[in-house]
Length: 540
Image: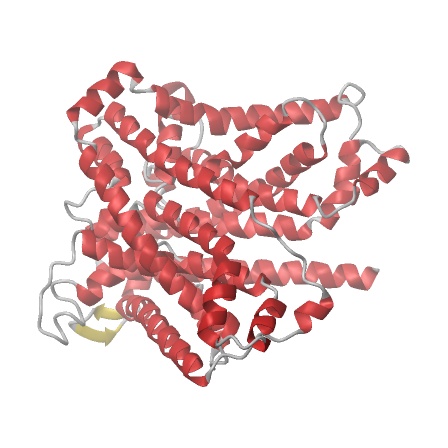
């Protein structure tokens, strides 16, 4: 990259990126941290009301992470190592929770196992109290195990099968190979899965809010303080405690990732098959995956049935009135807002992250390490903390002329920057600098070299940023819970409101519509991206 002094446009671009990050990432979060002031923190800590939510958050995170990771490991091992049938089906079912708001699992859980649940009351004639620790624990296990499954499966598939084959050739049995070779090789992925899942569970707001009852965790305590009492000072203090916990987990994950050794498997090594597992193990894997997939399909199947029947489960007469309600008048605006906000935010976030990654990765200017840190910082910030920061920073009278929808879009953009940014950095590290230098040596400016040479080579990173931001924007609740207004209500907010009103038919119809909209949008994007690739190949 040429000297910033020789390229004023490049210097302006760098200053603009830095200013935007400071304004929309650093400033809002400082507002939350500084709002209580020293006296406010002292008073809140002396109050002791934070002890219960903190203890509950830690307890819930430990329990839910343990069960989610155990299930994720079993599912991943079955996908990578076993010879069981129906693997494509299980892979498809395993990603369903990733495409829906996590709290819809809590809504389905109530329909199935609540006081008048289909299974608890309809089958067993019981009316259990599902609210509290046990209910949230079960719901979060199902909602977040796919994150652990994806990370562990990736780690297992990267491991070199030659080491396992060597152990088997030396006479080691299947269990010993698993215990002494497979499990140690998977430890980096397992550690990343544990910490990533723990972060998501710790930050989760929707599930504890819906079925936690009097079991308050840090995110629900922050929301309750504002919604019930208007206590911004105490809410900021409890949110800061949540941030410190999340930062601790994220730094542990970064440290673990930094120590991981990624080995490129050669063609010869990758062609070697993994040692076959016994038929009994494959059958056990099939049973475990079938049971877990059955629970997931039961959750989402109950949502679909509830959306298409008059009053599930008492009146199963087919109807489309719930979907008519969803699409009518202002109700349909929530879906439109979700699609528009998520699509615009995904496009901006993907491009901005890619450009910022290029500036940091290819730059030699002082301070770029600080910008690098700020660009990955939102990955450690809980959604409810990020949203509260925007509420405190930008909910000002002099900003009333700004459409609140743009505030939600900006929040989506900068909260999701880290994924696209890290994908861009990873892509740039695979592109030799000499390619950039060849363009600039022919007289092109650095920015033009980025646009004409580097950008076309980073299509994969751009797609990762777009898809991830879009899916997270469509499914998030905690980020927008403090930011929406009636005209800017999103689908997740509307679902949350309808569940609170016990309007299950409309709530499940909204959920099905939201998930369907996300899937259709992603399919359209995939088709368009494939079409661009095919067109490029034809022109070449």
